[in-house]
Image 1 (cartoon, rainbow, N blue to C red):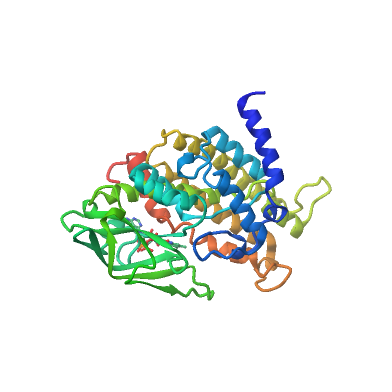
Image 2: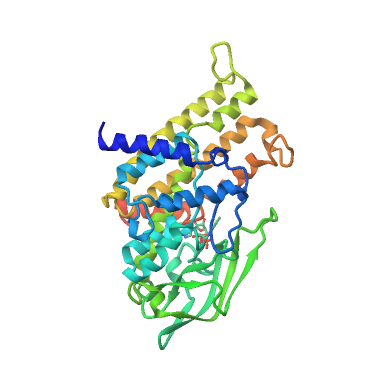
Length: 394
Ligand SMILES: Cc1cc2nc3c(=O)[nH]c(=O)nc-3n(C[C@H](O)[C@H](O)[C@H](O)COP(=O)(O)OP(=O)(O)OC[C@H]3O[C@@H](n4cnc5c(N)ncnc54)[C@H](O)[C@@H]3O)c2cc1C
């Protein structure tokens, strides 16, 4: 048996013993998603057990070094773990902006002290992070940000406003872009970390039309941030910001992959239109649309595997996350459009028990934000045109 086959066998056995049966059920509501943090209240003992067991093994961040709370796995082992978890439909033990966004940036740009301070707490789900990038006048044109950080001894004094800060009211700490110089647009930005309980930080949830508030306006009023909390050099925060965005876009592009294993799109279509005598979907038009979609989805899946391998090996083109983010999110929107079309008028059910409180239409509407969050599709296409295709005038 090769080394990687032995690892697969051991991983399979460990997961069989340690992943609680409840944690192999599909995620049904927000409560099923574990975000960790100081105020984390597990929705069940199994959710807590799964987080703790995976955290102890470093498998919430399998490819991070062990000294920072990771599993120290090679890219090949990490892939095996991902495959074995997918095979038993194990839930992600921890959803975290710390893992998908801040962690990689800290690993690249943080000092040893900063890494040892923050990474293990991210790995164990002890601190929940939010992202302070967008401002009322700085979205796509992010480098126009105006939140100021003025030097005062060993601290910065931060004043300004962020917007669309996802879960700012639930987060413990924020990673934040601030302006430390007005001399240069990109070259006057610094990247700082601070506790959301710091005096002068306040949040105001933004109420959506649905009545739900997944994000906030976030205000800073003379917030003192130690300079020791700055990542990388002063006025070099744009490098960190862009690197982090690449990882955010990689994470968001994963939406294009669907759930793996079960295929709710096909299952839903069969439930609505049934099968013909040959065991094929009875509606030929719908069948053709789904087949066409599945070809695109599989091609994206293969491309995505290649991209992740290249990224982990440090060989990915810096603009590749934009390409993957664009295609993955557009694909996810198409998947849900098709699921709604396949479900007929029943698919619009919003409140019934049968529809699990309108899970499908709610998920469909949520996908509309996929091509905005982490940078809009139009902006990703601009980046692809300029950085990959090298189009003139782009
Ligand atoms: C669900 C969700 C969660 C979010 N969470 C966070 C978060 O946690 N933290 C955070 O900091 N931000 C967050 N955001 C904000 C997000 O990053 C911004 O919404 C996004 O970058 C777009 O900025 P904007 O909303 O200001 O739109 P604008 O930049 O005003 O864009 C408006 C429209 O103009 C188009 N446009 C703009 N410039 C160009 C151009 N050069 N070429 C072609 N078209 C262009 C855009 O594509 C868009 O269609 C979140 C957004 C969403 C939807």
